[in-house]
Amino acid sequence: MHASTVLSALDRARKAYSPKLPPALAQGADHVVVTSGAATAPVKDLDAIKAAFPHTCGMPLLSMQPGQASGGDAKALKVGVVLSGGQAPGGHNVIAGIFDSIRAIHKDSVLYGFSGGPGGLEKGKYEIITPELMDAYRNTGGFDIIGSGRTKLETTEQFDRCIEVIKKIGLDAVVIIGGDDSNTNAAVLAEYFLAKGLSIAVVGVPKTIDGDLKNEQIPTSFGFDTAVKTYSELIGNIARDARSACKYWHFIKLMGRSASHITLEAGLQTRANVTLISEEIEAKAMTLDQVVELIVRPIKARAALGLNYGVVLVPEGLVEFIPAIKALIAEVNHLLAEKEPEFGALETVNEKIATLAGWLRAENAATFESLPASIQSQLLLDRDPHGNVQVSLIETEKLLSEIVAAKLKNDLVYKAEGGKFAAQHHFFGYEGRAAAPSNFDADYCYGLGSVAGVLIRNGKTGYMASIRNLSKGPANWIAGGIPITMLFNMEQRHGKLKPVIQKALVELDSPAFKELVKNRDAWETEDAYLFPGPIQYFGPAEVCDAITKTLELEQG
Image (cartoon, rainbow, N blue to C red; front, side, top):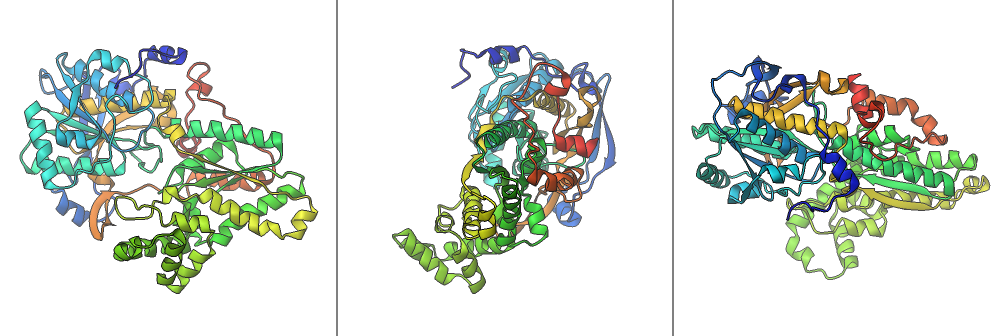
């Protein structure tokens, strides 16, 4: 099922938008010179990564400049594209960038869209992306042009099935658009193809709204800009409502299980009263009580000023960063895997809670019993595909507000100062994943797709498309490619050490985090809220082409 032919006024206007490209690609993908720079090395574990990736570990950085492409006359290319993992705004523009670039290289080039993610590549489910189909999706949100999926390509049997499909179609390259796991898959595929003597290029594109796929060469993943601006609009609306109604504390959970980039950026954009950062809580080895105190303190301070309302931002993965709860979850995962038949035979939630409490080690049992019953039951919900607690389903925002309410209930000083506590709860996630891309993401994604096309034209495999200098505007963007293996380290997965892309967590010495620390005491007690409003696509550049606060602070 493809895009509706009935369009909103904004849809019609966005179709006329022409994304801006880095200078290196301004003359078209057929007029780009690619040069090799310094050799690279993985983030850590060089020997192990080199042993696992003998063909692609240590490849050089690539840079792109305008000029006459080398290699003689280009042939018509056949390229496959895969959308992998959760949606991120701008994915359609990545595909548009690939489509336009390979057709600029040769007018008869063909782009094949594999349906439903990596599983579509493995099963040979695809459709040819025609000019008419592509034009229907330019500058739109979502991944619905071909759909996405979370199939992991990990076994030689899967790789060989992909090879069969690729050979049958006659593909020259595959572009995998995804996050850290998906790009890890891309690197593994590239290495496997080379080991088999195949000249099929595999190129990755950095996607995730969580913002945890970033480094010096990848300043931000695509979709982050749009998603956080969408959430920040909603948070600003809630802050305005709170200031108007003067009677609720709003606890807002934001996507980002492994890292708090979304919460940090939203805090900077809206100046919420409390912005919790998981990485800081873990670094300080804070207890749940200490985390709750970070919220109770400003509630009391504001009550003394007659302000019984406010906004608290909570990262989705917060509970896993509190050492005591992290230890509890680890033991719960182990016990429920080990005793699955026995546990599964229990009929009621109360039986399961009591039985689990009896199995746990004393310190973890104490943590478990300190949690509200609603949170205890959420730890027993269906596991994820790896057999682990689905942390995203734990209502952390309600956990915190319930404990806050209990602490304030018998606080006589708080009540004497007119303190009244009532909570509202929100979880912002899906609201931002498929939004119409901001001008930044529309440009950035189209540029990344175009860079991928240039990498394919030059036969580069095992690379990720990269655009740097993002804070300076598209006229100053720097295009290139980075070996995916340079992002690798070895991590425990399913009990075994495996090479994976290292997740980028919020760094506590980063300019963005320091900006939050510098201001948060004032923001706790003052009504310092900012109201970003909806994403603007037309108007002054400082409004419609604005970058995130994180990029602005980190890159100047």
